[in-house]
Image 1 (tube, rainbow, N blue to C red):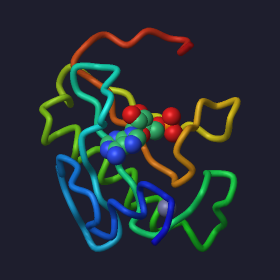
Image 2 (image 1 turned 135 degrees about the vertical axis):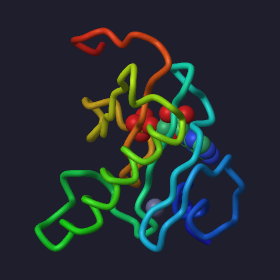
Image 3 (image 1 turned 90 degrees about the vertical axis):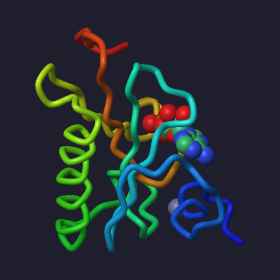
Image 4 (image 1 turned 45 degrees about the vertical axis):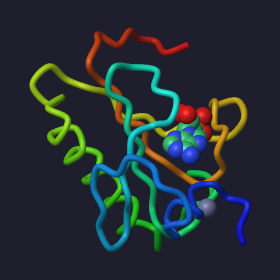
Amino acid sequence: MTDCVFCRIAAGEMEPRIILETESVLAFHDLNPVAPQHALVIPRRHIATLDDTAPEDREVLGDVMLAGAEVARKLELEKKGYRTVMNCGHGGGQSVYHIHLHVLGGRNLSWPPG
Ligand code: AMP
Ligand code: ZN
């Protein structure tokens, strides 16, 4: 059994609140939301960080971004706007080392982020 929590979710060993599933990605509500709406999109395949990606990951990275937009529409965030974020590494605020796109909305999001 893997100790990667998002691989375990992708393998169906845990039951997050799923928003959408495709052949290559999975989207679900974040366990500890930091906005009224806070979803995560993960590739089913393990990739630790954005820095570990290569040109051959182009398709799955595209799938993650497109799923992010679809999730935002499903959560009705598209009219008011929302933010997508992929934290990379310790200094970037990454805590789970399986890439994931945060989709945040439902309140005004300030810039720059903390
Ligand atoms: P990051 O800090 O960018 O790596 O984001 C990791 C995110 O994963 C955090 O927002 C956590 O709340 C979220 N998270 C961790 N474990 C789970 C889980 N089992 N189900 C849903 N979200 C999770
Ligand atoms: Zn993983």
